[in-house]
Image (cartoon, rainbow, N blue to C red; front, top):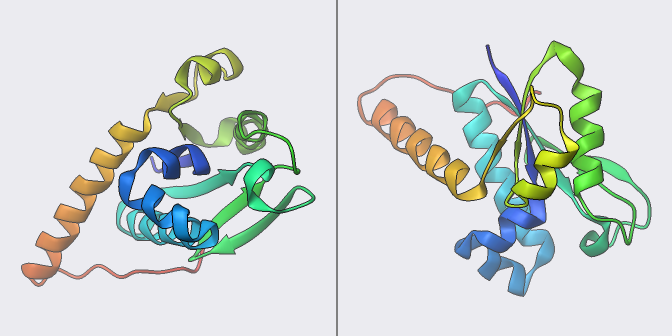
Length: 152
């Protein structure tokens, strides 16, 4: 069964060196780069990926939503952190989805989420992405077909 994976956006950006480096030059660029990586992963894995960004850094005055590189991006209001937004999105997904939250704030997150929601660290998810990328490369090299689709 495919999962709904909800990413703690800036938490992941800050902890992945290549994304953190981009953030130093362009916050918007780092969001786009993360969403491009996540879109490729979603296309290959069949999982749905959402990403939550804190309004504290995003420059969005109000809570909102947009699509970046085919990935749904959600923003908390200015001045609010991401944990409550992650909780709201997980609850919104409801019991009809297998939900996983990716954050490095695991202790804080574990206290906010139901037991059926799994929590994965950013470094573990980064390894999962690297493995998916390796498999995609092997598929392309062997002539197997896989298609990127942003029609979600």
